[in-house]
Length: 473
Ligand code: NAD
Image (tube, rainbow, N blue to C red):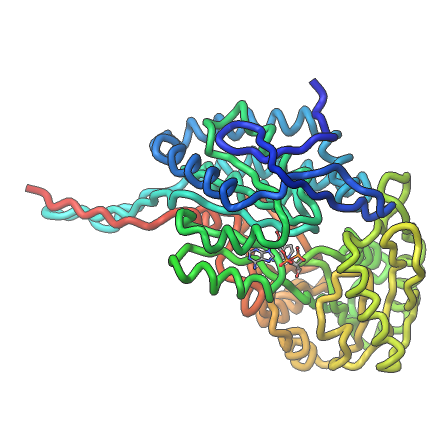
């Protein structure tokens, strides 16, 4: 049966449930209302936590093999519904349909591949009189708090690690993008026992309600640095474990020996994908002064060919920004172009339209202290900056409080590695950016986060370490 993408429910204890009050978000391309979704109250959350605790008792005792099988069967259901999910993602998030299909495809891949990672038992010592083994046990009830920019992959990227390691999980999507996450939980119903995967939609009060709930053992949060601090403060009251994936202001350093024509398409896509609303997009592009003028000219020419418009239309690369709040924030940042006397090599203004559309904008060598360099825009505006001294560009790249990721671009791999090895960030790439894998831990340094998701280290974030001592004889 085709997936119904017109009615939306919470998923509690294996059932689709409704609430007395509902809300809706807007399609960012048209500002038309999307369907109604539940507004969860405290009793809904408490019911989900109770069901999760009950489910945990038996789910935590199943084998990795059993959980892997459940994840694989679930992945097949996601695959069967991938087109409907991609269309729904474009309707709620705004990103072009082909980018939605990529995100859904990644979510399916992550669902299949994360559970192939073996959780080890480490024999630390095995002597005549004593054996010490380090093993890992699940935490209990996890909450997955998800932002609006990558709502499918980031929900799955928390749900699967949680349940594969033996926990129960409650997914809380952003109020701006609740639709796909509710369907992800609905599609999980036939594959997992009731209470193992649940989802609650709500208003702005639901996140804080979750972090205060004493029955929840872990919060995996992805969102802004400001909210991350609130999550950690609230979680500290009951010593919940936290993983925080927060904001970034990624630098890319382009050396003078690059093949300009070859790197420009990659750099342009990796700066403007999803209207630059990705934590790990290139947000500061440092170009060597020897090639700066030619680079900027060709970069502007390439980006000016990106088509802006509704994500449902063929050939669109720049969809709308996701919501009114983000649109207003972008307008405020664009005002700094005039106020700070910056030069826009492309774009530079926002014209009101039917949706929250912003044409890509490139700022030509703004001062390091300008807002567009210092802030994470989360909108299609990119500063391109000149550099000529390696030590200087490294210190400018590292000057940010955030340190999510960074990249260096040069065919001279030794030179590039030398620069890369000095950069702050949870991910550093040479000749690429925003590459992710279910097997590679992903997280931020400094104010970009605490802990990692994915890879063995990410999975262990959903587990306690236990040292088991056996005295022999
Ligand atoms: P946000 O912090 O406003 O919201 C994220 C989620 O937290 C939403 O589900 C929201 O409802 C919930 N929330 C809000 N207040 C809360 C509270 N007090 N307690 C608990 N939950 C609360 O972030 P956003 O605007 O949705 O996302 C954009 C930000 O996320 C950007 O800064 C971006 O860089 C960052 N981000 C980081 C990563 C990463 O992996 N590091 C990935 C994607 C986005």
